[in-house]
Amino acid sequence: MGAELTIGKLAEAGGVNIETIRYYQRRGLLDEPPKPLGGHRRYAPEQAKRVRFIKRAQALGFTLDEVGALLTLDAACACMETLALATRKLALIEKKMADLVAIRQVLGGLVQQCDAGNGSAVCPIIDVLARD
Image (cartoon, rainbow, N blue to C red; front, top):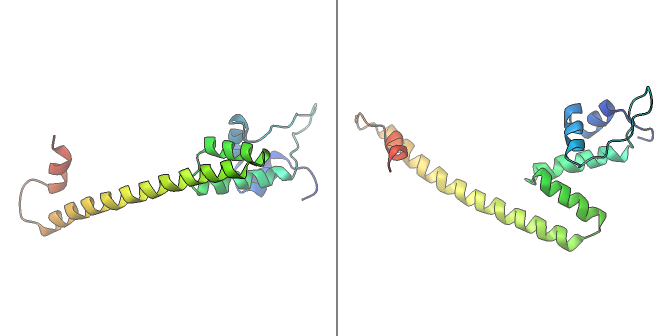
């Protein structure tokens, strides 16, 4: 990709839609090039790489604020700070996973109580959720 890209081509190269490009610009994650008089904005091909970076970081669970921090750290060649951010994100993901396992166990038990069908008029799931 040697030539400059229109916003549509940038979106296509980055695997997103045009509104996503505009949103990233509003969030300060992507520069908005000047618009020439009577023309269309043109994006450098490297911007497609940046869009793909943002999408990959999001897929790993980073928020857009965290993605912005990663981009800043990349520009500063701050590998240790990047490692610290990724380590914190990993710990958060591991906590969420543990929480999900606990939720799964409780909900699974409630579903089993319903499946047992003891004929009670009170639904075990509703009963547990309604308790004070």
